[in-house]
Image (cartoon, rainbow, N blue to C red; front, side, top):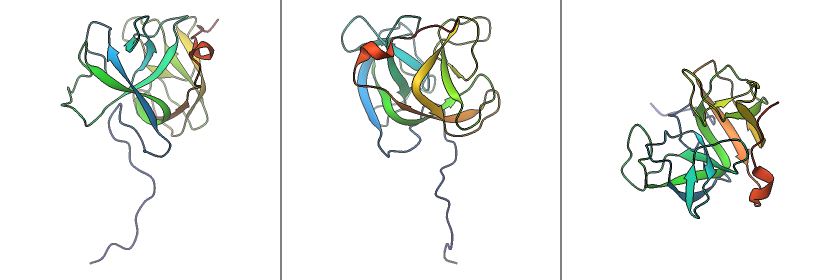
Length: 167
């Protein structure tokens, strides 16, 4: 029997996968965090050229660490000192800390308490522990700890992407 219909919407994949290749742009950066960095987390530029580090207030957002098929994948993330792909323009699947709906603003966790992870995504402010990502929006709905599709479009100048913690 021939297939007579198909969906133009892709199902959620795994955390850190690029959601579609339409208008996607990635840059290569080395993991200088010193430990494995989970895919699907926001990362910031390091002070060493060509490296990324964990997000924190006043650091410059690099983008979202995404999975790539150009080298063997470690299921837990990108090992220390390895070069990974950072999504700066396009959509990626991320796990969210709280329920989100399409159109919600995107925030990244800067400070982690118990059960939280630096670089994780949410929509609501959390004291001074998170920062709003300009030019980012949720494209799909997700429940707490679910997969949501985030679209980002980071500017070409890093000075405009310095993270400022919520007040």
